[in-house]
Length: 315
Ligand SMILES: C[S@@+](CC[C@H](N)C(=O)[O-])C[C@H]1O[C@@H](n2cnc3c(N)ncnc32)[C@H](O)[C@@H]1O
Image 1 (cartoon, protein in one colour):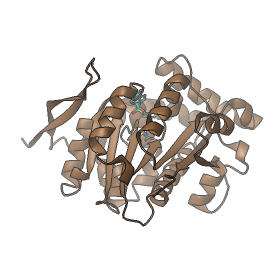
Image 2 (tube, protein in one colour):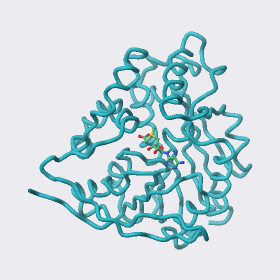
Image 3 (spheres, helix red, strand yellow):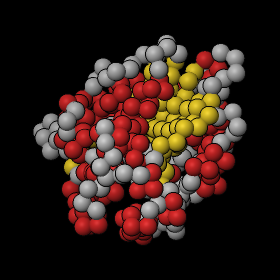
Image 4 (cartoon, helix red, strand yellow):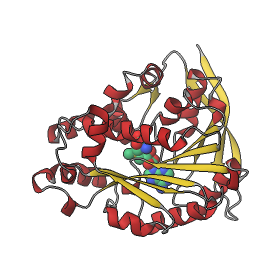
């Protein structure tokens, strides 16, 4: 039977906040050819399926994931909003294109860190266009070793540009130490931070610590901050969709609450040196499809993206 095995560096917590890596042996059965993805992570990939299936590499990656655990959730949410994939696909299309724009065309060394990466193949998609001098770091609580194994099968020549780490983002000491091991020259590096599908799960004080730590780490910093809006900023007849879906996700994941942000609250979280652009779902839909069919107005959507950029004073 074809078994793939490899050793993987897994980040482990150290009370003295010293990063240690443990070698972990990961095994995958090539004949089964699919990795079982947990229910909520599988749900996002099922929603995004129509988008990834049109892309050769991401489509192959998707075909290697067993998403069956997400089906009951998908069926439940389909009954609330049958066109919910539009939301996730607009978001994914927007974030990928925004990151490409932020990378730009210069030769500056760039590190893209995807916080709460889950099974998103963003690094895979972007690595086909950008290798040197762009590096990718993915961080999530779990599954990063298995994900990196998939990368090593799909893009053996490029997977060395992608580092996949398991860590709790709210543990900022650990997060920053991990980033420092990948960013040897902060003054000569651009850091692009992606938070997609993450900010709802992180309590506000923890998010403040994350943003402060990132701001202190590196001068050339961009942050793509995708978030859920408070219900008062959503058109009344639309509110029931995010309310019913996110309160179910909240209970299902045993969280006390889902964290929401308004544009003003995000701007207040950032230091004045950041310039911030703001995109509601109508703008994301327009960018992807050229029309605003599902989101005719800014208040028709509930997920939005702030893109904050701070350029160093002296290059
Ligand atoms: C809804 S999924 C989004 C996955 C991916 N970013 C996407 O949009 O396709 C949220 C992810 O955030 C991760 N996550 C939530 N809280 C986290 C934390 N404190 N530290 C690390 N990862 C976290 C979860 O494990 C999960 O994979």
